[in-house]
Amino acid sequence: MYELIGVTKQYRRGQARVDALAGIDLTIAPGDRLVVQGPTGGGKSTLLQMLGGLDRPTAGSVFLDGTDLARLSEARLTAVRSRYIGFVFQSFNLIPTLTAQENVETALVPLGVKAAERRRRAAEALDSVGLGERAAHLPSELSGGQQQRVAIARALVKRPQVLLADEPTGNLDESTRDEIAELLEGLWREHGLTFVMVTHDSALARRAPRLATLRKGRLTVTDNPKAAAPTPA
Image 1: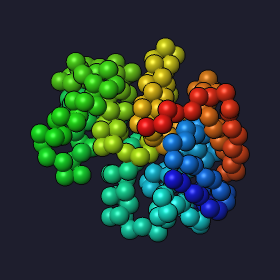
Image 2: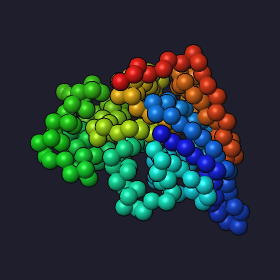
Image 3: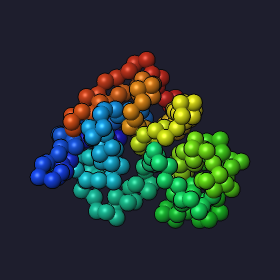
């Protein structure tokens, strides 16, 4: 699925050069669930952006199914993100003037899905996250956990191969955090997704089959054999 070879990302901070990623090598197989942890500023979100084609490395290659995302044009990158990669963020990123149903449908517009099919698939996606009865509600009428469920439905409605989540429970209380974590794990198993999540939460990290730790741009990966593997699709 993914193969990262010598991935480096450098930024300028005043006169100083900062290596957010320093020669990262990483393989992520289809169906893997990888959690990325590390201190603030250690490169976690930068790594996720590389996997999602949201940023390009200063050096190195990011292969997704044999295609180097770092070498694609912006138009082709946009097409890859639209079709193959779902994103979930800490801040939900819902459009406040659209209903839950309409927010989910927005993910299908770039794919050219017709209106009737968009409505059907969005309704199914909301049902799958337990929000079928809240489809007509605006984000302001939903709790934080419900808003994140809408965001997850929006990420999954296009039937991606990859789900990338950046601190998806960071704005939620402990009880809601556990609910969202269990939902994401269930969807990972059900759909056979390749799932990469950035989190500061060690309780979530312990549930993952693989844990990557990023410190000062350097990556260490360990396996957790006690975590459950997905049920084959």
